[in-house]
Image 1: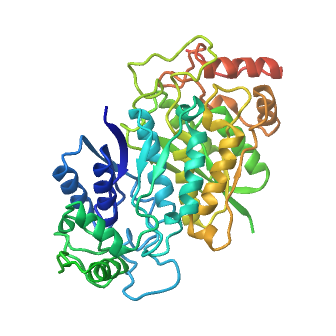
Image 2 (image 1 turned 30 degrees about the vertical axis):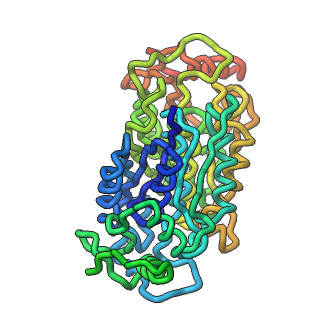
Image 3 (image 1 turned 90 degrees about the vertical axis):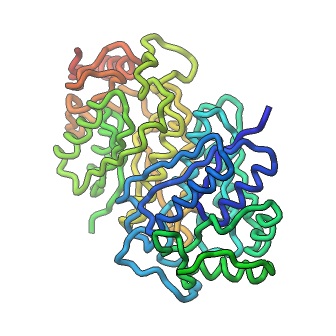
Length: 223
Length: 223
């Protein structure tokens, strides 16, 4: 019997690498993406393409009320995506995003009878979002195991974060070894409709530097 | 300056009582309801009516993808709502419901700059749902305080559960003292379009017995 997992798939390089790792560990992967009116809609197209490439048994795209996340540069076109580095949590922060995404992932997993959930969060080369940190994931996992019928009846959800302590070049090297085609992934916060990247935002900078430090060709399509 | 809270408002008697308590404590209440294709759609109409009656500054109805909760008797018309008591978690259980509702409440609160959240969960006269228990709420609150920018910057969300240790008659007596009109609330899992109750489901039984034990007139409209 194959193991099954619900896997969060944004269409970016981290979630795609987390998928490649789960598949390599022989998980049957049920992918979950969210349409929250992210300005980088090309990211969702990338998620679709990745799910198709790997012939996943299911790829669910869950639409969230577009007014919920209206206060972030990732959803509100009147707030500019920053193109310089900063020590603060940037305006691309989306309130409670991973908390909501994981809650829905756990609910879907319970419905499917699945206990394992993969999320490609990374607390090393990232923008400083609070919901990418190990302490958040640990606390969320504990909470999820009090929240559901499945857990009350003795089951336990396991949230896997295979990338959490890896640097960007390490992530890229792993994906490369697993034959992941990164040209299918979109990281840029403000890519154009075809998914071509700006080369300037946080996400582009981490990605570009990652390829460079990994000693691998940057296959990103730039505008 | 008035205090503000995000308050979960289903349209049932518990959330309405929790609202009456918050208003009595001088909170300005931002109400949040969810349309998840619940079979008791009259519940949402009740929530609207309650929000209007109390002239709340905002009542947000958040639509959740109707396929998410498809496995419960509350959303799937092919599963009958049970009309006899049982010691098990009943088929009206909705996977991860309060986890998802509270996650969205916290995200909305962060967007509004609000730190207090009210939820009318009750762990005494209830159907045994895991996400109504104090240990779940406590764990969720801890998790929420690791999940957001607001909490990383030193703030803390407070999840208020004024009903959690009250019996149904105690809840009804409090609401009654606060002049809450329970005829505006709908508890029944399978009420008709006008909100008239079946008198048979778990929710109806707890409510009916509650009025009886409180020594107050049952103002529920029955079909």
